[in-house]
Every structure is written in structure tokens, then in C-alpha cells.
Amino acid sequence: MPIAVITSKGQMTLPKTIRDSLALKPADRVVLVMEGNHAILYPLRGTILDAAASVKSPAGKKPLDFRAVRGEVQRRIAKRAVTRGR
Image (cartoon, rainbow, N blue to C red; front, top):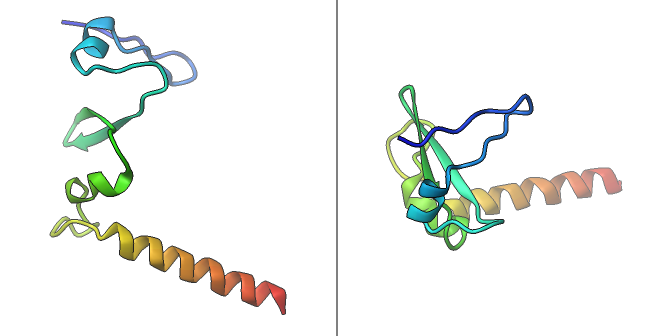
């Protein structure tokens, strides 16, 4: 069983067997998902929109609509910019 050590800065190096199994290369990104008291590591491939169906809403009932979330963030930023511009 591969073991990783957490540094004082909270960093760790994934063991080579894990990197090879997941085909991870330097600068690749991974997502850590908490399930109970376990953390599950998934390679992040593509864009965040590709992963949209795997992320649950805060209520845990249905997947988040990342396009709607992005639109809401853009509206709030635009509103803040207009308010500061006055």
C-alpha cells in the first residue's frame, strides 16, 4: 500500500505507483472529494464544465449548473463595478 507524508506546509507527494496508475504528469490537477472521513482523488481532465455532473448542490439533491453559477458571478461582479463607478 503506497504511503504519502504530509509536510509542515500541508503538501504531499503522490507515490509513483499512484501517479502511474492515474497517468498523472507534472502540473496535472486533481480533485479531492470528501466522502465521510475519506478523501477520494480524481484526475481533473478537461474543464470544470466537464466535471459539472459529478458535483452536488449544497442541498446534495441535484448537480450544480456551472453555467448558471458563472452567470450569477458575472452579474454580481458587473453590479459591483457599476456601483463603484458612481
